[in-house]
Length: 154
Image (cartoon, rainbow, N blue to C red; front, top):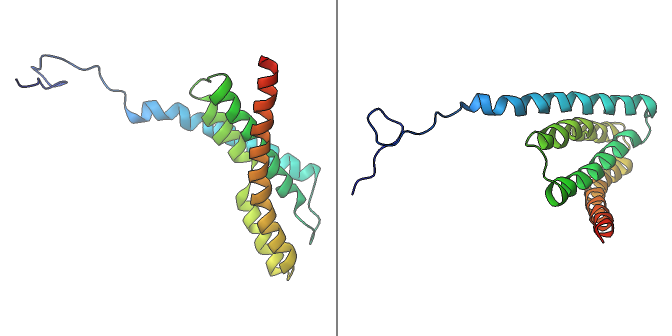
């Protein structure tokens, strides 16, 4: 027995019209852009509040990246294990806000600047410490969020 073709004139079953990919993705692109602008503005505010002195260790970038990673650890626990979120929350906050807030491109530029200034030991320390701090922050924050949420449910 042949299966009837779908979605074509004269077919037995007609499929629902498909939404174009653009119509599906446009809201996602919009919330990522809005969130990215918000996160980048917050990062800029952090650099104004805690400026890095010329030739100094880039503590602001280091701190922003660690804090942003900690927040994403908590955020992912909440939206994957506690309460499902609207489909646009993760792109807005996770990709947009936190993607705009954390700044691994500035981390690369800061590392290069430290090396170019002849501060090789500091550059190597910064190069190693930032991803280590970021990964540790995600892990610790997710662990802590799970513990707090487990305690609250008890």
